[in-house]
Length: 279
Image 1 (tube, rainbow, N blue to C red):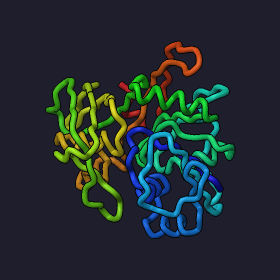
Image 2 (spheres, rainbow, N blue to C red):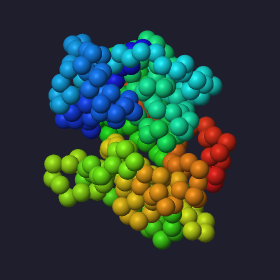
Image 3 (cartoon, rainbow, N blue to C red):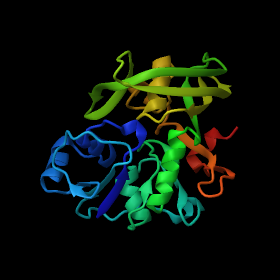
């Protein structure tokens, strides 16, 4: 099984082994084994150096033995499709690249952006390299607008807000990588806007708008503000009893059509367990 990745601008400078740990849900030990066996190609060449820095636009191909049959893909979750791209409504609990992309197509399609395993909602997938490059350019110019819905703990958050910080690595929890707000000038900037949708006793429904796309950005920012997302076992483990899952959903994507330029806005079909998000 071959999985194809494209390094985006936010991942520029990341070490290859960290990139593979992030996107394959493998341990560092297994990533090293993969590299030693020449199981990873960078821009068409086998790469064995885990600390090799990556550049935006690098093409990463990972060759792995076929594991369990993929049961994650549901064709009814394709909510929009054209010749060059499609949008897929990802359920909770699916590791995006490893479990999903290959199940959708064995043709070397690539993800334009990614969602955490614990997050549900819209994924944008390119069917060819030309379309991928167009979308990557749109993301870099901040012409792709993403809207998430999230239930957070607490009700005192301002009706609207904007947060601009730096985000860097934190101490892992249970072997899972974590991130935190830092003052380190070498860490990447992360920018989020929000608005309150509605309030209920002890919790608030937010619309979140990530201006940048850092790993765990929305989860880190909300936890930093003191309003963690409900069900977040990584950034708010004491609050997970309030929900059996992370209450974060990628509701919509808006962008100019990659070929015609016309405005296009597409919306997720909320899962049954996410009817709580309906106003």
